[in-house]
Amino acid sequence: MAEHFGLKYLRKEVLPTAFCPGCYNGILMNALFQAFMELGIEDLKRFVFVSGIGCSSWIPSPFIKADSLHTLHGRAIPVATGVKLANPELNVIVIGGDGDLASIGGNHLLHAARRNMDLLVIMINNQVYGMTRGQAAPTTPHGMITPTTPYGNPERPMDVASIIAGTNANYVARWCISQYIPLKNSIKDALSRYSRGFRFIEVYAPCVTYVVRREGKTPGEKLKELMKKCIRIETWKNMSREEREKHVATGVFKAEDKPGFIETYNKYIAQALGEK
Ligand SMILES: Cc1ncc(C[n+]2csc(CCOP(=O)(O)OP(=O)(O)O)c2C)c(N)n1
Ligand SMILES: [Mg+2]
Image (cartoon, rainbow, N blue to C red):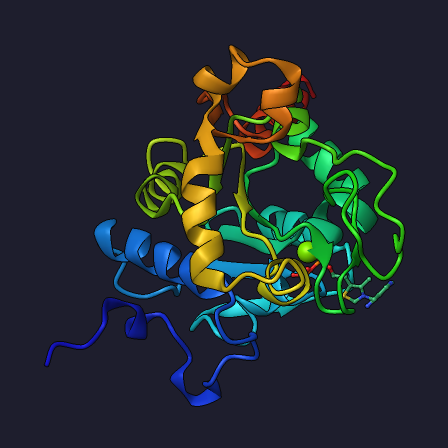
């Protein structure tokens, strides 16, 4: 039997993964590996993965067969920025959670996007702080009961993809974990057609333990629900406010190919040196 394409990029010696049974993080890993395979990437020697702390931060470290930095909670983006500045030849990918990237690390996310820093950031929005047992995050739906919102979440979730689309980031997309093919193609685009500047992909994938099972659903049932709930942004825009709140707007929010920070920075340095 032919070996599964993913095994080439997976650190088999650390299996099984630390994820809960049915966790959607595995689907994202599969999409990532399929994107690498379809791009003809034989090994990940030219890649560095950086993550913070959380269940999703475990995807690159220790499971992906590449150099990785497992940093502090919320600090993946500044460390990734340092890696990229030190060696611009490397492809630097950050993978992390909604808590890690949009809450404690929110400021870093905003400003790396504003700078159009040459990084690909994949954020798994599972709606909660999964690793610490499902507390409310800035992405938790309005009304959701969690250990920190026992009477329901009085706040409304932030729309991270739209916020990042409002910066100078080159590429912004959001996909539900049920939209496997567009998600995989989006990762491919963010590594090929749009290979410079800040690229942000939000993956909407509710935590199977602290969201899905709490709702009394199985991960499979939730995937079927997501197939109806996740719609293209163009359709979502024409809905009433009530209808919008029941759906997730997905698609490519922005796709530009402006020079990234490194190219622009080098231009300024060259000009300054030339003037001497
Ligand atoms: C400075 C700091 N504050 C808090 C924590 C505790 N902590 C560990 S993981 C985590 C939340 C992770 O949530 P998220 O990034 O959404 O990842 P998930 O587990 O949901 O994939 C928190 C608050 C920590 N490790 N370090
Ligand atoms: Mg989370």
